[in-house]
Image (tube, rainbow, N blue to C red):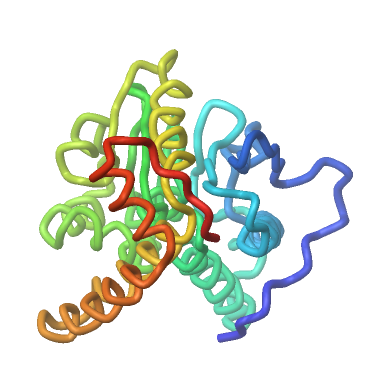
Length: 271
């Protein structure tokens, strides 16, 4: 699998992804709302280009991933996939590119928050699962319905099963039935469910907290979390023990402890 991000398409004047920066937060918006923001090759490439740029920018402290239109993301573009039926090399490229983009969400130094205002199905549900945090409107729904059209959602299952567990993931995969936002919350797919009108406020709750934390500690902590999460127990403890020891050598760790003991706000300086 290639490790280089493909160049974003220039075939359309309207960008596939809009990046708005505001006070250390990068707001990425999927911009094909009239089609429920399908993860076509061009959309995947556009997302990846933006993620790579944000990852290199020390001034960006968090990412909010949202979408235009009535839904968040309806998964892969079925029309595009059908147009390449029988072309296994093209199909493999689609899933390789998408998988690489999904993994990058976990490898970015900044936390990524999914802002889910409507349907998130198939690879769109996977996209929510791969973000570090997720906030959903109470009108949002989630599904892995590929089985309904003869395409088992095998790659979306990778992320979703790591959030909700095997039995619940298999229920979604085998039935294709959607779950509502409250069920997604109970199953662990999202962190918060709020009325649609309060979605931005709920996202801001997380971004304000992140902006108040040490960026160096957040970056190292996220990296350590994803390194250990799939490892056996003893190896996970070995990994995180090294991570915590390195964390304590940071100036921000000394500052944070001194501030706590001194009952004053910390003054973070690390990157």
